[in-house]
Image (cartoon, rainbow, N blue to C red; front, side, top):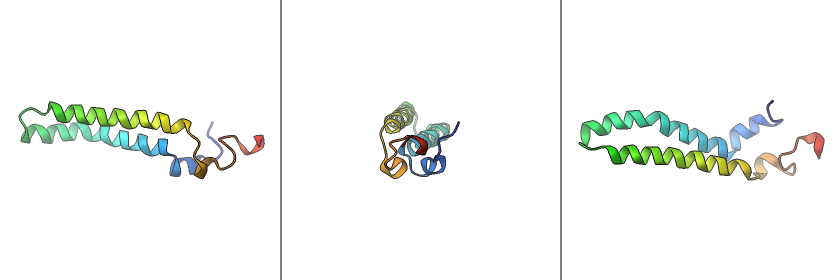
Amino acid sequence: MLVHNWRAVMKHAWSVRLMALALLLIVLEPVTNVVAATWVSRNIYIQIAMSMASGLFAAAAIVARIFVQQKISGELNGKPPAER
């Protein structure tokens, strides 16, 4: 079941934004590995950096998910309008 204001959540929630960044890094990781392999003989540092960055964005999204964001929740504090 979707939350009552799912469109606002998709537009403004930091957890969604951070997960989108993590997804972008996960998708770009193989591309950067191929490009780095042609320029640098040992691209292990680039692989580690990309993996760490995507993991940090995913962890930040988990943390962002539990905090109330006034722009989305307003005075509801995450409760549906019927429970006010």
